[in-house]
Amino acid sequence: MHEYSIVASLIDRVQQEADAHGGSRVYRLHVKIGELSGVEVELLKTAFDTFRERTICDGAELAIDMVAAAWACPSCKRAVARGAILRCDDCGRPARMLQGDEIILQRIEMEAPHV
Amino acid sequence: MCETCGCGDPEIVPIEVQERILSDNDAQAGHNRSHFEALGMLAINLMGSPGSGKTAVLEATAKVAGEHLKLGAVSGDLATDRDADRLNASGIVSATITTGSACHLDARLVHRALHDFPSDDRDIFFIENVGNLVCPAIYDLGQAANVVALSVTEGEDKPLKYPVMFQKADLVLLTKVDLIPHLDFDLAAVEDAVARVMPEAHMLKVSAKTGEGIDAWLQWLERLRPAPVEQSAAEHPHEHHHEHH
Image 1 (tube, rainbow over the protein chains, first blue to last red):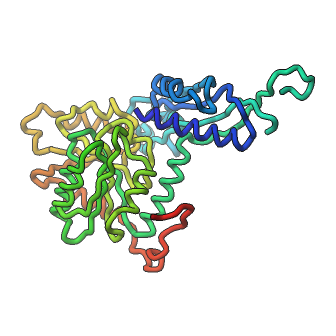
Image 2 (spheres, rainbow over the protein chains, first blue to last red):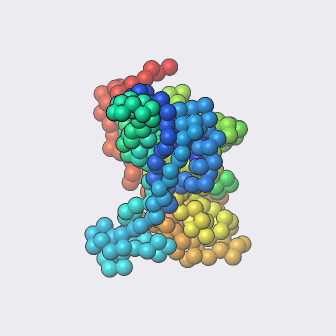
Image 3 (cartoon, each protein chain N blue to C red):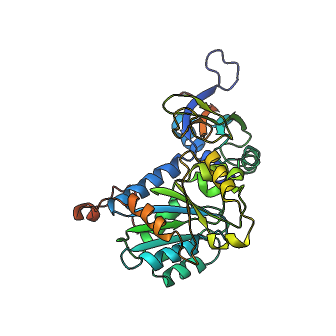
């Protein structure tokens, strides 16, 4: 259940941004979570709903952008399907993950006097 | 409040961040990494299920290499000092990181343990993570490499069920291979599963009981060891932005 520690880091980060911008109330957080990030989205939502109370994020919405995993050969760029052997069929090189491991805070919508 | 027309609506502004949520952990891990590098220590993050044989592999490693390599370890444990006690008895200088209810180690816990650690002249420093195939995978600790212990009794499909852990691994240690004659274990199936989740699939078969494969494991570690550091670098290990106690 590391989702709780991720939410704690997330709220700390939002508080830093609120301090820097004179923000008082947070309306919405946009986060990007990859399919192979190791973060379970449902658990993340539950953790956020529990921990946001009495923090800068109290009442804020968590908008989650899910990112599917994608792999490709680093030299010939050929896509390697999820679940397949992670090696290029043509040149035999190990595949590289293009996307799918993101745990990113993209944007905060907050009430603030100036940015 | 809205300053344009005075309508009373608050101004909601978007603030772009675009950063990893665990950026604080990443920064702390970077600090640990420079600490290990400055001291010339090879740091290994050893992960795996509870009972996969992590501690036993380290004991077997000490048995073979303890004479010529200075080994150190910290063991993440929810409640006891049992792993560190076992490792100390095997000749590995060890300490426990008690995590309480936390299911993984993070860079801050490792950093604190490093400062309390009784020795800073280890050749190889093992960070034995909490037994868990999920949570430890996403926290960088400052290690040079991730190693996952997978025992032959856990089932061939574990890599497919826990892809994140295996995708981040630099090496899989297939442990307890001395038990294979007693099991319906399909080595080809586990090799296939690993190749579907780990781009540079690399697996070594080891037995802590018979010592099989421990030499190959040591050779793998030896190849990763950094070149000896200058004395001056060891005296001034790394920049700090915090107080040491």
